[in-house]
Length: 218
Image 1: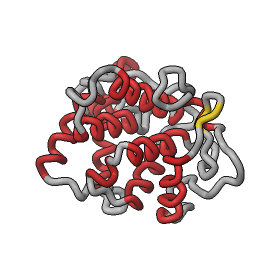
Image 2: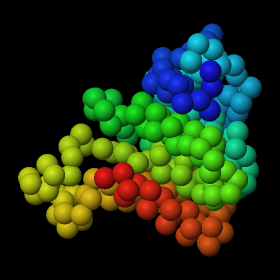
Image 3: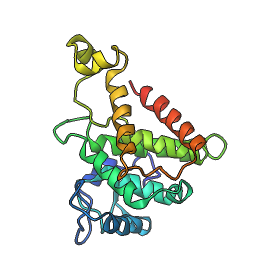
Image 4: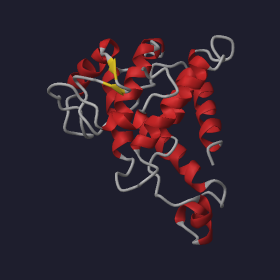
């Protein structure tokens, strides 16, 4: 059973491990170069009993593990000229900003959405006719950040309580607009700007697609 199948259990990634784990954890406690070496080996890992068994992946990081693996396998890292160190920092920061205290909108949920979208694109008859590399990269990134910094409250609650996000975004999809704005702000930081190698036109198209996809999740 693989990540290409509908029945793959993305939630099990949180506890999947095999052998000694390496330090691929939080935002600042890991050398990006070490992470790159760990994550780059995922392409050759085995799949067993519905779990991705990653000898180098520490339990508790389903989103960053799956995200890097999918981006690497699709050759999108090389295609987009991504800086691998910055990509690792970006993925780790995003995952760390999904609250572990949020029972639903957490990194396990984001990993599940990412894997489901991957199957739709690769097994749903969308490739190669409808999904090119630009679209695939945008879709993966949208899934990764679609609930970034979620507060655990829905938009109706935010609007009815006059939350600062509702005021900022004029009661229009305040949570989704925040996910997007916060994610793009993170990408503007030099240490997290993994997409700096894209051309201006490619970046504009990817940004527009990410915005449309995340806003559609309301």
